[in-house]
Image 1 (cartoon, rainbow, N blue to C red):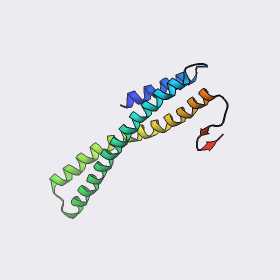
Image 2: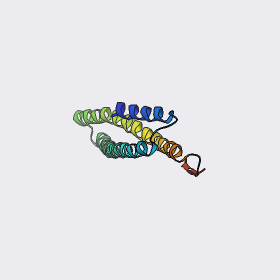
Image 3: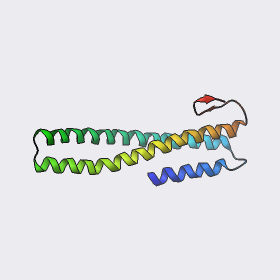
Image 4: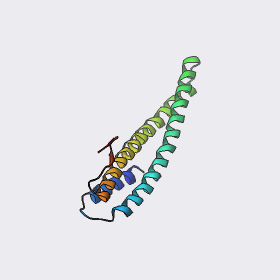
Length: 122
């Protein structure tokens, strides 16, 4: 998924360098892709939070009653949690960048009018 979102964002950046395109069609497709990535981001948020909660519970068990099995489980969950956090971080940041791309696409479609960019109407 990481490769797909990075490639898609680069593709839109390349389209934004063009002077003329069917901006309305590009915007429609972009909104569809953003919704796919938002769904992926939500699923990974749920998985990441679940693993984080499990990690905290298992660490609590380690403190309360340490056994080698509980210690091994804590390490295993941590090994899984780190890549989940990294992946969620990438998804979150790339989707945020895609929101900015959307604003730029709308600006290209509408010309120099009033647009909502970066939290302000310009």
